[in-house]
Length: 237
Image: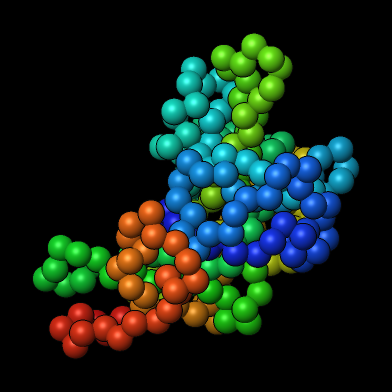
């Protein structure tokens, strides 16, 4: 899964990297500990124009009775997206990219209840492009506004990620962005083939402080590498 990530780049930096227009909404404060239900940046195509926008993290389907359902839909499994009622409409027409500078995952430590957090980044330091879906929900709005929300797609882990978790977010290479973002592209079979684990050599992971466990903690220090006690063993254990 992907339940926490880093969004420290400015909206202008995101727009430049993804060759998109900056968001019309007010900028989000940089965060090194983005948690579900917060607002996040997404890259989407709207009216033939690639744009950066601000969405709620936690997908709220158009048919939902309440936006509260979004807290349970922060991730969408790549398997069966075209058939699942909560995702099939978005998979066909409303695909996006969720940009991140890093993300976190927790590894079970043998013999211990506590888990060890790791930060995962691109080895080359470039931003990460998570494959996402977005929806627009108008329920309960008397003023004609709408809640736009997003979810991050996950898939099986590559060999590196498998050392700490059994899932990982789908990371799209630049060559896939145009096809993924194009709402007129309804080749679901081809789109599904993009939802695969990223190459192991793309990523690097480092153990970080358990300070990241608390969503109230924030700051660049959360990415600082820590030394693990010998009893935790190695990632090959």
